[in-house]
Image (cartoon, rainbow, N blue to C red; front, top):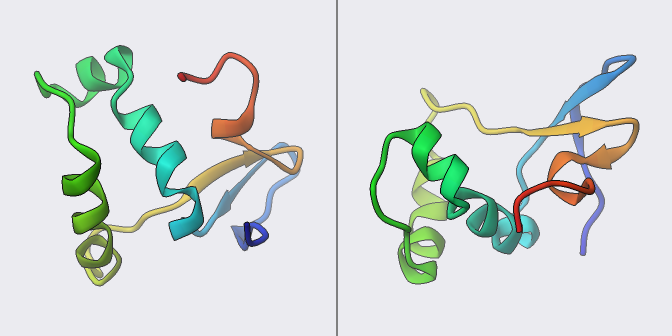
Length: 83
């Protein structure tokens, strides 16, 4: 897996570039029931749909994507994260 590329460093929280290697983590988190409720959707998204949409999202300049990193730990890797 590749390393995290920090876009905006901070003392407590940083923003990092999304990474295709992390797509399984994004998919798991996005299909968590609390996340689905927060998004306002009603159904989970299949792996094929999520993976297929990855490239298109990266080319959308109006839709900035980032990961939250706290103390050098990716948010999705933290204990208590969905999954």
